Length: 317
Image (tube, rainbow, N blue to C red; front, side, top):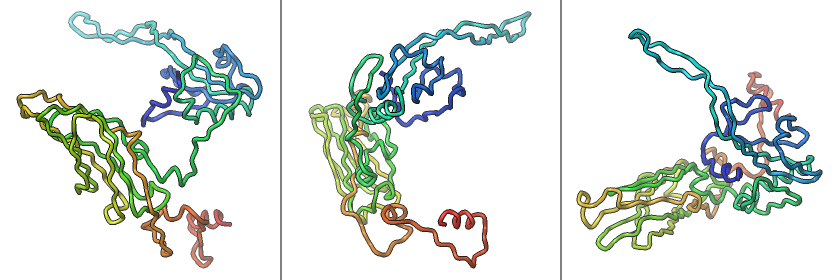
């Protein structure tokens, strides 16, 4: 289903195009909008139409034939000459429609799209949405007190070999909703089980300092956590996970691909605890310390009106 492809888009850039500006080179894309906003061409691709008050997920699959210009080099009397010709190109196309019979139905589709149960479910080419509910949303503060490694830019990294296998993650205090006194670092990972005589360790470094080391075993599963205090983390931080593996047969006599490891970036997380609250605010704590209350810009009337100050004054008036 197309929803699964959206979920697996990872951190790749997703382009957004207005109606009529989509490049011909893009064959797989998502169409969003109310049913009456779709062009007759797009609406003709739908084999089922939602009624008023209904939402719709519809996946259109097709094989598209296009005419493309092919360029090749031809040897003519000892010289290479560029020859262009037209050729028919066949390419698969998948278009996911997120729509609704009216505004209410379209809103149900959007709500359902944010429901993790819908994203993890399986259905055919279409899903009619009569009732949509999403209880999985969190407030900004809740959402920013616990961050997965993927949310701070981590990507799936399958590592194999002998010696040290490292992954690097970067985070800053302003990623959280408040300046934390403590941060719990939870790491969940899988690795190849160790044979008798093998030695393996997981080392965790924060800003270049070793803060935890755990011995690996034959289970192949790792679930460990370490809590750091406010003196150990900085405004900007670098977190490194390092798997170290030494084969019982030595580095040269055993296969260099005999060990693999992978940190689960979706289940591993950072969780801020015990907010650091002080009445003396400073820009060192910006922006996390300014999430509550009202932010105001004060501009003195005696200051000369630069374009920036003029914008600030109009903004606050």
